[in-house]
Image (cartoon, rainbow, N blue to C red):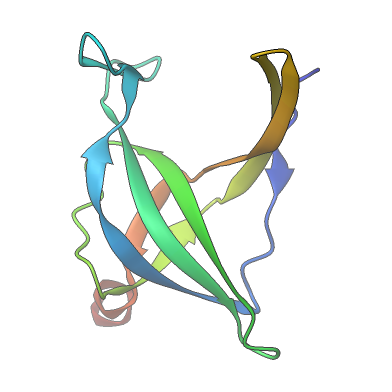
Length: 114
């Protein structure tokens, strides 16, 4: 399966940080932290994504390079949000999902002040 980024239209979505940003681990046993091509630590941030019109809410984890410096409860904007479909065989079963990545995650208040 090819890893083709799928752009996410965030215009009709509202995002709230629901989990503290944490470094993404490559290996939980060794504690090895994932880094990007430039050597920056990749952080995983838990976000709630709510459709403004319908009120439907999904919880997603978004990877971002560098500490996004956001806190639980802040309304945020994931800039350049894309999804990647993944699949893997584990224990004889095929699993699949969507992994999300953003170029940055910034608080909405910070954007308004700029």
